[in-house]
Length: 134
View 1 (tube, rainbow, N blue to C red):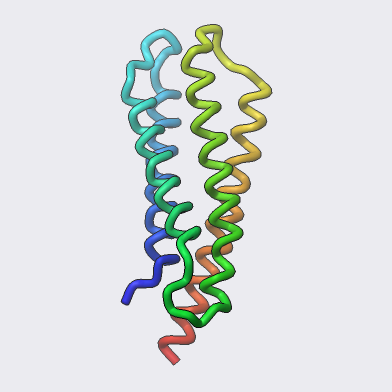
View 2 (cartoon, rainbow, N blue to C red; view 1 turned 120 degrees about the vertical axis):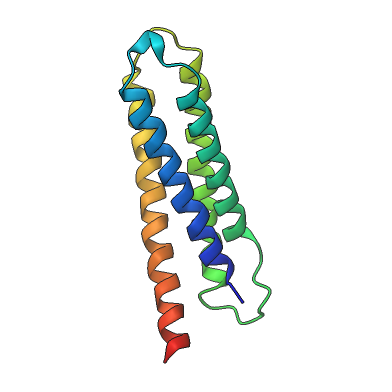
């Protein structure tokens, strides 16, 4: 049986990959010729991030408590961070003047939260797999 944290980790890695692709693609084109592909990739990434957050927020069905139930708090943090990232993307789409340092700093803070949740998730999944293999 695949535990939901493994599935959440997979969705979170998809979020990271799509965000990186969107950033690289957007940075390789001039400001006026961005097109829609970077935004499509970013929104697909946000969808993957929301899936990861929902998987972490789901109640533990094993009845064991412990580490499984402990993933709900990071799920809430991840949900908040992804929703803020989504909101900043929507706000910046309507902002035709270019960069906004406040939104950029907010995005950076949210990406740090996502990175911390990802590291905690990797460590948790690795610990469960070590216990199962021994």
